[in-house]
Length: 209
Image (spheres, rainbow, N blue to C red):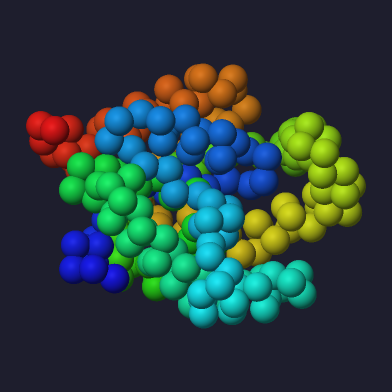
């Protein structure tokens, strides 16, 4: 990575079970000046499969296997460099909103070399039936009918509980619990209220551009 992108990027991490609304909230935050939405899915979709890293990614994804943690973070680093070089992401004035990455504690430890998570926004939705309803509705809306099955939904929630939920303990003391069962605009308001309290936000908001 370039020298500039090696600095610890100020970040906010949104986590929550599938269906809690991470992607929805991350995208909206990314449209607000001084915030940059970084979704794991966007990393993979923007990948150039002609490169060596791209070929490694295809090797796993074509078999339906999870991409290893080191490769995922390497892909992230390359894409962040591209965003910086094309001025889409300006780490000196933008807070990165992480969505879907890190996926687990191991990824979080590797990423700590490159970014500082100033706050974890945990979107809570204890009602698993409500999560399943949201996931089913989204899958049908996007014509992903296989993803609407009870078996797939149960597997995704179980994977979250085993892999991603431990991040809450890893970032203990730096987590804000947000009720994800409210209307999306209310959830957004709660998230923003937490972020604007942060020293890093106050410092960066003073920079004139």
